[in-house]
Picture (cartoon, rainbow, N blue to C red):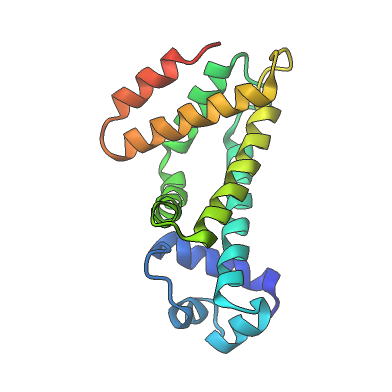
Length: 174
């Protein structure tokens, strides 16, 4: 087994069980290996979690690419709405369970979670830039606005206030 062959099984375990009570033994068991072998391959639990979160972020953006229309969006609002609609599908729910675990770790000041969240947000900003209209006057600024609105709308949807999130999406500049 290698890191690359372990990551899909580890990711599946985390997607099903979350990060909140992540323990090496059950994680290793889910991948058909031992906790010692996980440490051998990743160096430490912290580096394993870092690699795992990076792998999940890549899976998330690939899932978005698969579900997103092949063309660029016609506006910032259309990009945000499409991402919001896509990520509301049941197959994206496990990603968001893990994301809210990461956010909770960030709120608690956990440096590893803050670092992982930063890398994930950077990856998502790049993804949004690539999906905004080619005519967008400031794609970097547009991506920041779109991502902020999407994140807020998703959080509101998660707490049962999707209509408020939808209002935020609707207010986004074209």
